[in-house]
Image 1 (cartoon, rainbow, N blue to C red):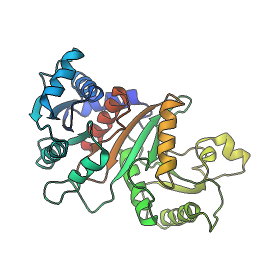
Image 2: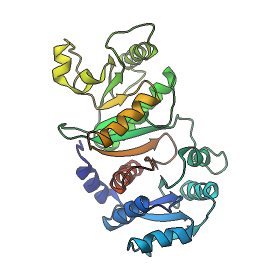
Image 3: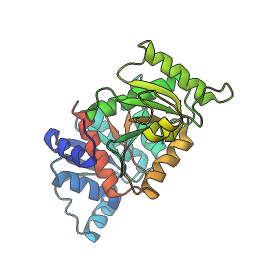
Image 4: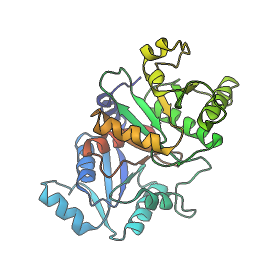
Length: 300
């Protein structure tokens, strides 16, 4: 089981390279990430966007991008559509968001004619490497599904399990994160957590071990779980943290980056191909880590 981003990079080097189609590539962090991925032997890239801006950014930062194919498309909507089409036609295996709003690239992904849509729910999985822990955490959903219902949460878990599997975790422990550990009819998240546990117990949600409701402390800290008398095997040992809705997921994601100084990556699952999707404020390292996960997802 892969336990760090260093191991993710090493494994991606063994399984790569794959080709990434980058939508709206005129962004320094994006260009740094794809150049590093190329240098590491992880990925090739097709850059779609404003060629003048792409070349100017590269020149100002001494980046050699002559190794990449660049497609001129200054209109961001059309750039997204072009990048998506490259993936749907098999010319690239991974899609990457550049300097563009998530909603715009996802609209292209979901286009019936050129897109990558399936019958599955699309969801974002953040992968976090945090100092002091012996494992990676998979946080979902911090970026896409605003207030998922029970059926959507089930598919969000299944998407998270796919990412964990791609990183060598064959039976991840899933914690349904709530504010409390007991089911309260007035707190929908706890009711959903109980239902998801029952789905897991009856085999309707397989490939993982689900527990909940669990507060964050007793999901990730064995000491906290023991102090509260929680003996569930997921308690204190969770791999996948399922957020009740988008706000706490987004706050946890950004808290890991800005408070804990943790390493982070982001991938969208549920489409025909993995989608590298990070915050525009994320560093080039976060984007490189996300590319590496995309390569592993595309290599399954």
